[in-house]
Every structure is written in structure tokens, then in C-alpha cells.
Image (tube, rainbow, N blue to C red; front, side, top):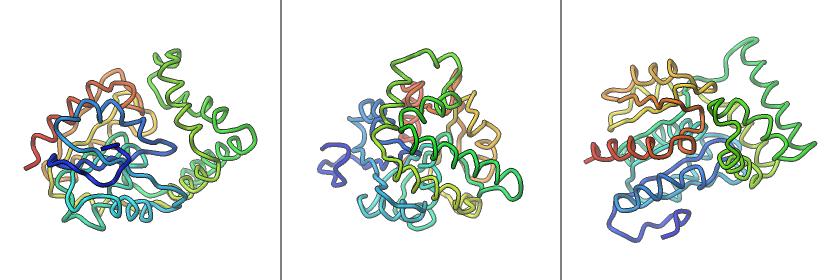
Length: 248
């Protein structure tokens, strides 16, 4: 089965993968390949949906009855919405380089809003790749900024999206719900993973999620920024294998 096909055709358990902002199947490629003998991967697509709830609903429509669930960055927030909408369908949960809090009140929230809208304006004026060249500077470990293979893979992924799709996802993030009540409800085996040098979603935020989820385990990936699945693919895949082994 192609990983974008929503209908598993083998007896392997399903793993529903939720990409982050401006991401697609490519962000999960290494994990899909590494886990091919263990799980049947289904990668969600959000289309033009402009709320995390609508994205979660689209993912659920494409998913089998029961599945393990992993979300990266914005996809982690979508995963929490999946947990809110259909917890009985989720066998295990992995939250990568993500967060759970709503847009902050006051100046912090306005600063985030301005920053996201500035990037959107740049994408409309100069194109998605030009926007990505600026945005990616804070998304990977500083030592990897000269790794053109890595950087080009991220920029290529961004460029496969339109400014309108970017606008819809920005809208979803600016109106994101508070995920904290969902954390208290999670009872399935849960992995919380982040890069040690993730400037967008730092380690303390992930530790806070672990503290709120019963039985959750934290994996901190060394020498790694926000794009953990691409920066340290083998280490992330190994963490996934350990997590999947805990799912009955």
C-alpha cells in the first residue's frame, strides 16, 4: 500500500501519522521505511482545513477503526484533537516536537500572531521557498544549517504547499484550543519526544506533557532541533519501535 492510501490491506496494525505545519509524507519517510515490517502507515492530509478540529476529523475519516497515532509539531496538536474526538480508536500515542497550550494572552500572543502573519505575507510576496529559507533558520539544530540535503528536503516540502494552504494552517494554529484537558484523559501507551535544541517546542514543555499523561515516557533526542524525524531519523525510528512494542 502507498502510505498515502487510507485503506490498510495487510494484517499489520495501523499507524496514523499526522504531519506538522507545511509538512507531508516526506517528514515521516524514514519512519515509514524503518517500521514497514511492523505497522501499516497512513499519512493524514489536511487540504484547506483551517482548524485543528477539522484536520482531526479528516484524519479520522481516512483512518481504520483502530490505530496507533503519532503527530509532529502542529500534527501533535491535531493528535490531541483526535484523542478528544475518538479516544476509543487510539491504541497508542506519540507526540513529537509539539505543545498543548492555546495562544497566550496579551503581548506574547500578539507577538506570535505577528510573527506567523509576517511569514505568511512573505510567502505571498516572494514565494514559499523564500519564506522557508528564513523560517528554517530556527527549525533545525544550528550545526545542520549548512547541510543542504537536509535543508533542501525541508524547503522542498514547504514548496509543495500553496500560500493559501499556509494561511489555513496559520489560522488553525492561531485559534488552537487548550489541549491540557485532553492530556489528563490519555490512558494509552504514550511517547513524548523532542530535540534537545528544539527552539520552537523546548524540552520543559514536553516534560510538562509527560507529567500530565499517565504512564507517558519522555525521549529527548540529542543534537537535534525541531525537525526531529528528519534530523535524527534513526534515533526517532528506534524510539518508535520501543513505543510500538508497548502497545497491546
